[in-house]
Image (tube, rainbow, N blue to C red; front, side):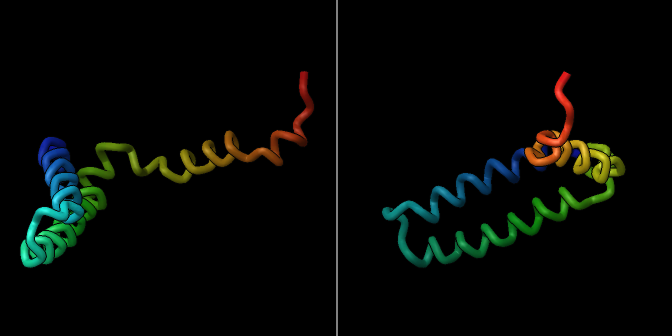
Length: 84
């Protein structure tokens, strides 16, 4: 798992987004950058969904993590609990 590659791609993506929104760049270049942005997103997503990355972040425990967050953020369920 090369985490630096992922970080580099995210940095490049940020630059491309800023460039697409830069009015001083000509339209043909902006159009090309728009296509590059799609490809960068696809590459970043493929890395994030890869088995190596999922293993790196402990994705096997995702269901329990979701339950834990829901328990913490569920205001209604905390209203029903007795306070000591």
